[in-house]
Length: 221
Image 1: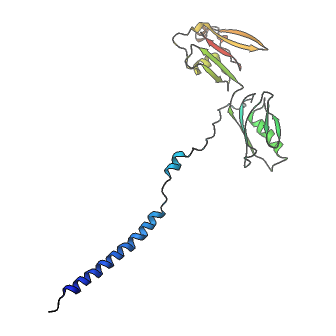
Image 2: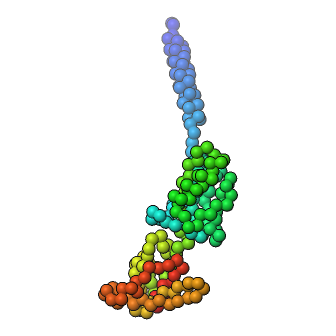
Image 3: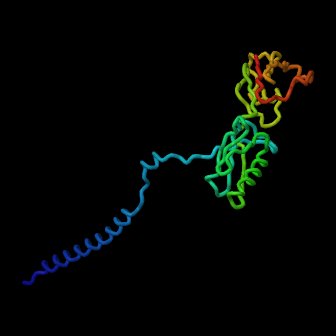
């Protein structure tokens, strides 16, 4: 008697082999695509250093006069080799590529950029120069003693004694408000200017509330 078992088994085997082959054919391209995917390099991201951020420029009023020790940024468009962040030396000069020594003390940023652009015309075609004040160091006053935040403060605008006290956070509970003095050095000689807080805030002898000079020190006992 003829048996159907062998043909059935053979047919099932052929179907199984065909199905397995199709599965392998589908799996291989998927593996290839997976292998080509770029995975993030965790080690590189952990060790990568953040890009240096430019230091923000100080907010200075229009017409600010640059002085000794100020830090300024001279930026020449499309000329990174010429662009520099420089400190104004005690002789009032800065050094820049191509034009070397330039005196900038006593000038505004706009005047400096016009002068630098003019000097660069001998080397560059239509130089576009921008000058910004990065940090004011030439015009500073100091406050010390019984004050909330003693330290150094920029005089980027006319600042009175009362205004400096406010910037420094006001007095501590132990401050002797009527014993304040301003130490000022002029022509090599130091003077002591008295400041009685109560009188000034009451509108009496308001001339004590003087505009501070660079280098003044306010002492709050």
